[in-house]
Image (cartoon, rainbow, N blue to C red; front, side):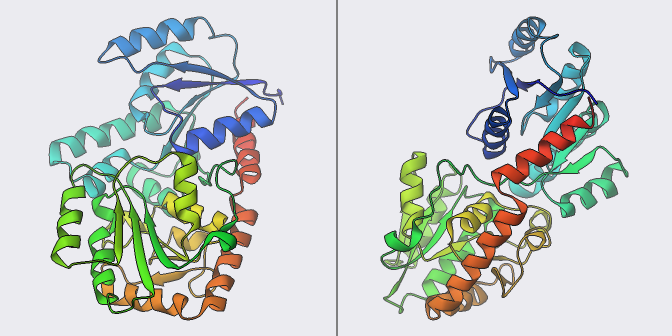
Amino acid sequence: MKKMRSVCYFGMYTSVFPRTRIYSAGLRVHDIDVLECRDDSPGFMKYWHLWQKHRNIRNSYDVLIIGYLEHILVPFARIISSKPILVDMLGSLADAEFHSHDSGRWRMVKNRLIDWLAITFADVVLLESEAQRSFFIERFGDRDKFKILYTGVDESVLCCAVESKAKKNLVLFRGRLTPESGIFHILKAAKLLKERLDISFRIIGTHYRLAEPVRNMIHEFNLTNVEFINEYLSDEMLRDKMCEAKVALGQFESNPRLDRTIPHKAFEAMYMGLPLITGRSPAVGELLVDGESCLFVERADPADLARKITTIIDNPEFGMKLANRARAAYDQKCSNEIIVTRLLAILSEHL
């Protein structure tokens, strides 16, 4: 088998996406050269610039990697590259647009076509969970090219000094305020716990469509126990805000996409030693066990969420056991080293 020496990261990708950041950094740690062929020019100019940049390196790499959210570029990459192509799809673009972004029927059809083209022209398709793979097989047929690779976290940024920094019973939600997040169920749970003066909530989230409704609900319910941070935070500031929490929250909407996705905030909680409460999900269940390493709640059920929050707050030893077992699961299944070793094995199969 040929030894892999370099890969080409191709497209309009941005390093802020955890999968791109973790995978590319991990490859470099293993002495794999990562050649970046990137352009985000508007319209069709990006294709022209990408072709020009790729022409200069087309014989200098072993595998071409198309990063997360770059599904649309796979057919173009197949035209200009003779090397194996790996696309980091994570999940279905059409599925995300329909269930997470309330897109219309036409846009969903267009994105389903993009999904199909990406799968057809790629040699390897990376997905985020076994549940996601089952969904892809049902929709696109049983294909050996579907491979599972977890996301993990950037371990160089998220330090685990949680115990020394946590000063109060703070419940944390961190992430985009998408429809699937269940943010309004979280606020309703906060309302149910208003009389618990020892419990407070911190919501760190951005979304231009839902930020104002979130503010309105906080005002309507007079949620003095909720801190809403609706701005970009640096990695270091975000880490420090997260480290002050005693409980981390996942996603809670009655959205079928949650059956097959693992929110990044779940990996963060696992690594940082925060007990996680999240909506019942087969995908999250691939990593964590309800009552042993996390707590599942019935989705779209603020009362159940409020009960589970008080269970952890009122039983700190139980919360610590959940957190410790979750960290052990992280170390066994989705540490940076394990993920990159798995990625290298997948790439090597196609040399």
